[in-house]
Length: 427
Image 1 (tube, rainbow, N blue to C red):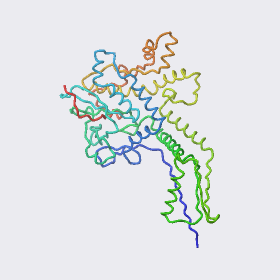
Image 2 (image 1 turned 30 degrees about the horizontal axis):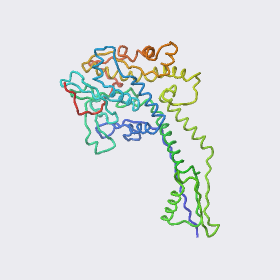
Image 3 (image 1 turned 45 degrees about the vertical axis):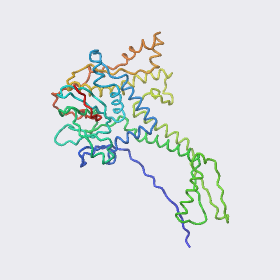
């Protein structure tokens, strides 16, 4: 009689680099965006933020630097009105969305005559989808839905006109950067590190599983007294799992009673050498790739400690890194936001204003400057911030002015999103 054998083989599949696609061939009124013909783009970015410690630290830190101390103006008569039009917390959320998703949205509220903008609020950009272009060369509407994964909620979606396309009291000003071969949405600057963020998350799952399994080695338990029925096999597997898995079961031993030594169970340990070195390498490599994607010169700026970058001291490293970071990373984001806000102000009856972001300077730079000049931190703060300010982030030196009379098509035109608010600002 031929002996029965029961052995399972697991096939491992390689995940390809995710390619984000705007699905313009959909039958829907809106344009889905995602990987593998699914509308999962924003969900993937949110998951990468929530599960990767390095990625979350980078997104939070850069978003804080983008916002700095908020937007302001040298026009003191307009300063108070500016804070009313764009509340500080709303702009902070816009800065965060722009960094995390590469897209952001203002909910623009007009007066009844549609001549002057009254308020500009944040709207979660992941709740918006662009309406497909038909005969127009510009997105005319955005569709709002709290959960695009729920088909029932999709039936309740709200259509909101894009900024500058209607006479409605509420419009969506969608803020995004230019992306080649894309029209409706843009990608975050760290999109190339998406898989590395997931790798870092999987490492944490692996270590958690090791702890819960009592750091037991990978082993195969063979029972040499025949192949039992499926129900019996499941019972045996459950007993082994309950007895030996979990942190409280670490160090337990197995007792086996047998009628014949030939039928005793055998435990074969599957050797996996130098695992700790492999885990360390993967963790460090994933972290490094995430930092590169975010264009972070020194992780110390965001509380991430890595090997020395060749600076003689942490203070020296942070000074140099902060200056490069502001020029190469932070100020381009601020320029995008200032361009969008000034576009809204010019077309919204407020007019061109001299707007800029107040910078958020690390304390170590201020303290060292204060020590060198024998001054207090408060005394040197304004001078240090001014010395590091880039004039390109002020309205006076914007590379592009916007006008209602502009007729030519620019594929880098800002799209429009904003959080839906049913309350309108009264005159």
